[in-house]
Amino acid sequence: GYENLYENYNFSVEMLLEMIDELNRLITKYGSGEWNTKETANRLVEILVEHRGLVEAELEEINMGARKLTRKDFLGPQERAKRRKLKPQDKAISESKRKARFKYLTALEQKLHDDKHREMRKLSRMREEQAKRYSTKVVSDGDLLKALSGALKQISTLKVAGSLNEETALRLVRRIRTVASEAKVGLAKSSE
Image (cartoon, rainbow, N blue to C red; front, top):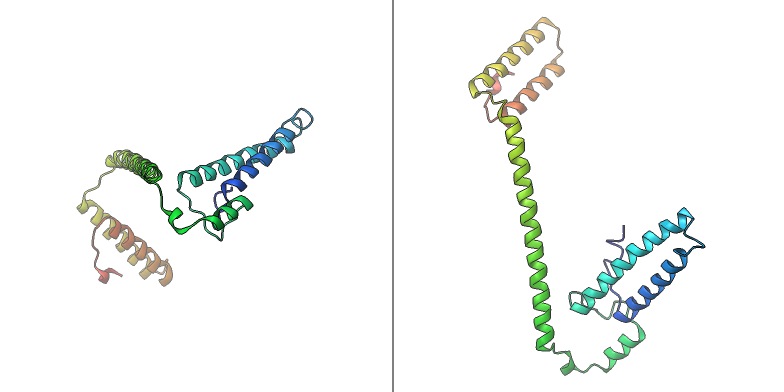
């Protein structure tokens, strides 16, 4: 439930560490013997643990350089002071940091690629299984065309006999056309 909560802003390392400390304090308090028999306290601890994991993940992203802090983010006093002292030449990224960032991003990109590839294989297997299930129900184009034509004739007969009103007849004809187009069989519009 917290995925989009912090989407528009980031926190400095200093503030994230403070958050983790506070979350740990609350988890310890509400996970203690005095509270752990209460369902609400147990649920709160679950939520706090989940949130702590998200905060720790954000901290890791900041430390690895995947997230960049801007002056609009929530910066603690130490981070603000550090930025005020920062000189333009200090902004250059060290070679080791650049390599570490490159390695991290490459690994992340590879993981995304592998996940996508795995998902595509899964979808492919699902399609193959679905095709196998439906392969036993193959109807020739000629048989399908005969069946659809027969259905159109019956609709016409019922309409002429007064058993179907115009609206119902048109709706049935449209459904037959939809089936025909999905099966890639063309029907002349004159059959309406």
